[in-house]
Amino acid sequence: MIKSMTGYGRAETVQDGRKWVVEVKSLNHRFLEVFVRLPASLQPLEGEVKKKVGEKLSRGRIEVGVKADSDADQVGALIDLNMPMIRHYHSLLSRMKEALGLRDEITIGMFTGFKDAFIYPEVEVNLEAAWTALEGVLDGALDALTAMREKEGEVIGRDFDRRMDAIGRSLDVIASRVPQVVAEYHKKLSDRVKELLCSAEIDESRVGQEVAIMADRMDITEEIVRFKSHMDQFAEMLKSGEAVGRKLDFLLQEMNREVNTIGSKSNDAEISRQVVEIKSELSRLREQVQNIE
Image 1 (cartoon, rainbow, N blue to C red):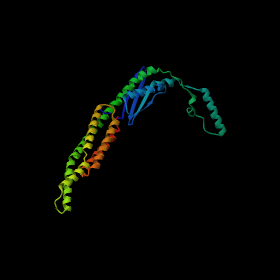
Image 2: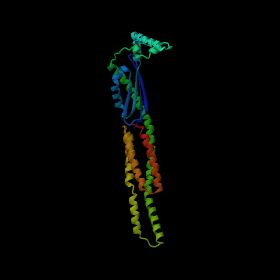
Image 3: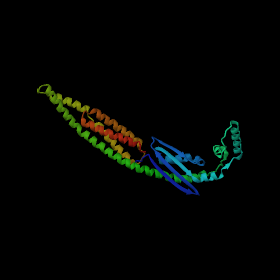
Image 4: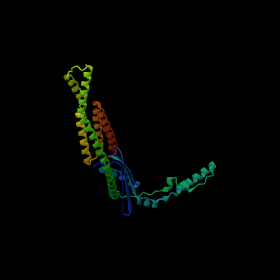
């Protein structure tokens, strides 16, 4: 089963009076790229979070947001005023106002912009216990994300099947058309020679040689065989359950190369029309492949 690279997962829990919330978003990306937002006291756990994400996901831009509500409550209750610094700032602002002849009043809002006007306590965190709690809720968010990616992957997979079926039908038309093209060329060549020779007896062996040369030039048997082999590999990869996005993209490039060769070898309107249909489907498939893991 293939997975989409886009999705969202959320999980939360409460342990020891602390509420943990983890949100995980994923977007398309060529490789695995993980961005983590953690409370300041939990920054040392960033590596563990990224490692956990890497164990479950292999491709995409992953954004992980972690909230631990009691951190803010605990720190907020302990924040204090740095009154010596505040008085110093007030003195400086008063001097500035007097020296420049300013009429503006000195307000409390001016002091909120001075970070060192407040004293922020250092909160000790048991990182081992914190990771034990965080790991469980992170697993839950990643599982929810994976479930959404799998659900979207099913939709994409059905679209793949429909388009590959359409390509297969066009390829069958091309394969059945080749003998007819050779026969039509034989008839046109014979008619043209007769016309030039004013209905005189023509050398059928010579005409046969020309037809054989043309048939050899437009022989697309190898291209069709390779194309069908790529289609079989494509179908197998869709069922593998692995991260196959880049492999599928490579196979589609190979299919496109084969169909271009088919188009260049043929000199038939119907084959050319089917080639255009196949290339159109391949283009849509390549767009969709960019969305899967």
